[in-house]
Length: 593
Image (cartoon, rainbow, N blue to C red; front, top):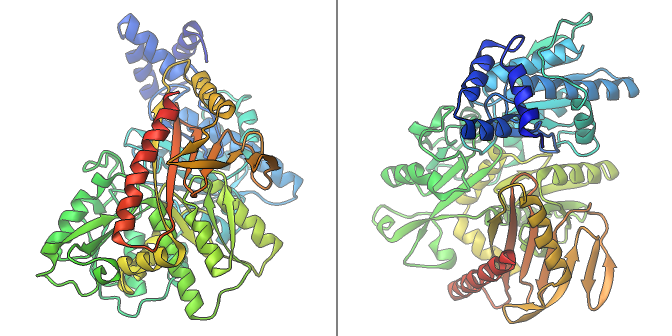
């Protein structure tokens, strides 16, 4: 963090040429603020340089070294270009990069700036010239054999944000040391636009063929339901996925596709939602209104860049269990129904269970099939995999870890097959993919709804594999002292862990920072999962609490879950959620210190 004097000096240099007129105007506006406001604004926007991590770079758009703008995009692009060229030289290969962008403010401009940088660095560019969803970028990287993929997006964040996401040649998000190499390169670079190069790269604008290839791949991955006449209300929440989702549904035979018209076209301000995030229940309000008006029983959604999924289905409230399935609900029955929004854990597990149930019907279950989930997602995933006899892999939070783990497994055994990977934050993918994909997962959700319905498959899953429910709570730690306070909280819990919760003794403490599990009075080494400052407590009933500081925001998050061992019923569901509410209170008390 820079001092105010250091930040002010840098701001003053940005307030004159060679910086462009918009930047100069923005800096002058900062410098003209009243003194107290000026100091805060200068420190916020020039007090540090944006960092680059395995999720790339993300921030509010504005002038300054700590914001997303023309110059920070050019600088990170140059750093990534330097790393790509270095690796291409050592591997004696040719460097080429895929570049795409979403519908946010300035995304198209930032993509053109990135193109200029890579071309000036002698790197060939395969560029989309229209708004595209994020899943198309890793698909194109793998399909066309690119060295890297760049997506200008801020995913599900509010309209003020934008970002820079980077994919490796394997189609997964980058891992270390790529990110640390980029940070090292950035530290040597100033903020400037690229000049002309003696040997420029070649630019190829990608046409619709690659999008047709993507649609064909999605449809080939999911082909189950026979009757595809069901009405589907869909909203991309003003994001980038509308057109491709439409093409996928049409090609797969779901012709009763009903987009929410006010949210279908990309809009940089996402005017009808706080943020384009299906995890927020109120983001589906307009879709719910359309479903009621049009007599639809299924709502599907994607986030701002199309890599997350949202699902809500109509449940008949007069009956329960599999009999409440939405198939065949008539207009007279809809007055006795309500829409149920699924959690990220429910979406991931029911999609996995459905896929495995279909493979079992076809006699195609094999032990080298596998599924993945993040550590803070529901342990029900493991129970499902064990029930069907496939391998389960647990990774640290984030699809960067799951995508690269899947790639590692498949390189070791080319005959293996990833069934599904998911995280509780509404990210899912299936089959031959290395990153979350809201389009292919929404198509799978449509098949489930058309093939006996979500209530049927949820009931079948809970009956066969046991019931689980999950939630999360968090505490913010703002200000300069926030980082130290977060570390201190985790350390206190490490030194004084809970001995019981919900009336059951704690039987396991997994400490991923120390790479040790304390179980039955023994220290058992944790292997196969990198270090992270995460504590995971499990009690004798299988209930759990996982606590970790956020890697991108000043807060500590506690993920919690309960397990039920009695036969599944609506009463068990109610009992589990009562226990879950109590567990949330326990976790909040732990975060309070």
